[in-house]
Image 1: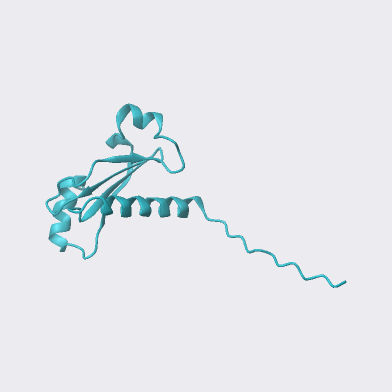
Image 2 (image 1 turned 120 degrees about the vertical axis):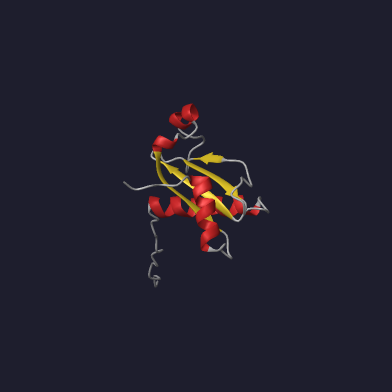
Length: 121
């Protein structure tokens, strides 16, 4: 009786960071798909791991409702439930632009309106 050599299945482990990035990209795509006037999605990452997102239009106005979510959780964290994702807890914020991208001046104007402008001292 001859036995076949066992073939090991290659298992790949996905890092939590990569998984979170893929989930975030899927949320961005969904928001843009549901927002025909949206030219980008404002993404605000909070220190607790929750994220706030909303589509923006070509004038920097909201093109969707603000969505707050947390990866692999049934709901957002208690801190976000209390303060709605306060600015003091923001760790990263940016706009993910839909292609074709608006020109640089338009992007800067919208970013300043949506995310605020920073001055260095």
